[in-house]
Length: 239
Image 1 (cartoon, rainbow, N blue to C red):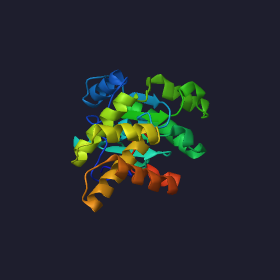
Image 2: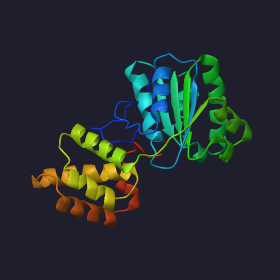
Image 3: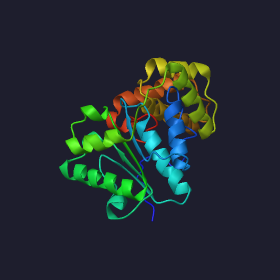
Image 4: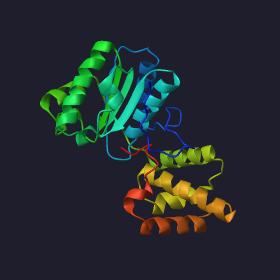
């Protein structure tokens, strides 16, 4: 009865616990309360630049609902099929600015159904509701619930997130490697995470510890790779 549409590595899953909050503590707390049934607010709209953490939070909320044996669904740039076909307790629609006309009507109808059923609806976009290029009635609905801007991380917070991610993968990240990655890698966290994963795989193949020279090799390989493959598996702060 549950549907989860995620394209992420099986050894790393976005959760509320592994989200590095930074300036988003109030938002993180509000989501936790809503999922626990401690809040009457059932509609959330998150907006922010690419890499700020919107997708991570939406996916984490859906995963938390599934872990609690609730019907839940997530989709990016579309309305989840499960949510269209029947009731779900938590539904997340990522990248609403990518919805076509039919999907906008679907999200409008979904909003009304979720409100009537008491379900929790989460949506995200790159802009605040007022500035979205969507149907007026849908923009209005998205602005009726709680609206939060998701703030990106500082370099210090990115370093914390990278160290935490490395720990989850089972290796220690030397400070000099972190600093080199932050200075010379792409600035968004999904790309930084992807580089870290590539470094981990590279060191395992070579049976060597992570180091700046090995990271340089990884970054050089990524420069020559197609841009859309660099961060395909990581979205903590990818939308």
